[in-house]
Length: 359
Image 1 (cartoon, rainbow, N blue to C red):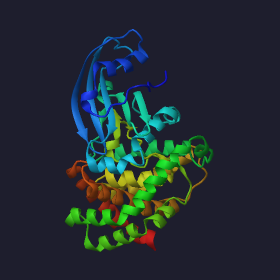
Image 2 (image 1 turned 45 degrees about the horizontal axis):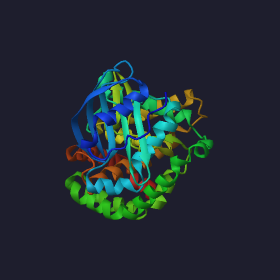
Image 3 (image 1 turned 45 degrees about the vertical axis):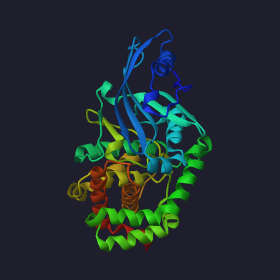
Image 4 (image 1 turned 60 degrees about the vertical axis):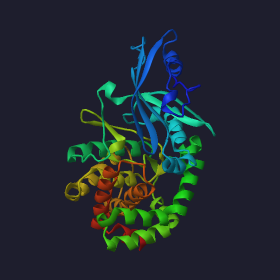
């Protein structure tokens, strides 16, 4: 059945009414009735995330615990995310592409996005299906990391070098992507400088100047990071955007989905999800596993040394992303943000990533 997509836009938690929920439930069970709606929690970051209990009489067709995403109620994240319409892009992903993606994804109940009016995404709460939501600061085990790497290879192998994908789904690297890149380039230097200041001793002074050089020339370096084989990438693969069914990971938050270089997802994940000592010990093995899984998916023979070199360069992006998140503020819980900065900084320093990219 298609996702419900009419008249479900909301802007604030107090708009979650019985009538609103009724429109969603009746899409799946025409004679169903909703009796009560209770907002259990409100979390405000890059978006506003609400956990909602919905009491209704169609429990076999529709879950009773919902997770609702709307644009952020915090001013700074809203200003950053509104123009590129990140939530609109995620809704496009779930409506038109997600059915073909070979990964575990959440169940989407309703989604609507209207230009200049807003966006609302409603999904089944993960806990109702006994899934465990990941936390941003989770430090994963090697076994868990291996499971995520296998799933990323499955995704990347499925869409490897398929240029027609951008013709079918022009929005992947369309206006949202272009606005995001333009804003990122324009704001890169002041945000990097502010992020470095706020991070304090977590980032060494020796790393600060290469980071600022990267930020000042971001357009050129991002072009270099997108110059190799392209596939569908998540582009924000940190522990908080995962969920778990036993040992199997699922993937959340597809607001930044695009065509890009697959090993960039691997770099972002390993830099943010593993404690530095564990990453140092196992990253080459995990990258070999990634290459082997791509081969099993039918990707032509890859040069493993070349993949490792590209991995080292792509580590610059999670470092940039976490510092920019800190600089903007109110986008991620600060303690978790600082933890990911610590991990990403260690990865960039270990591999001299800025020097590899800049030189």
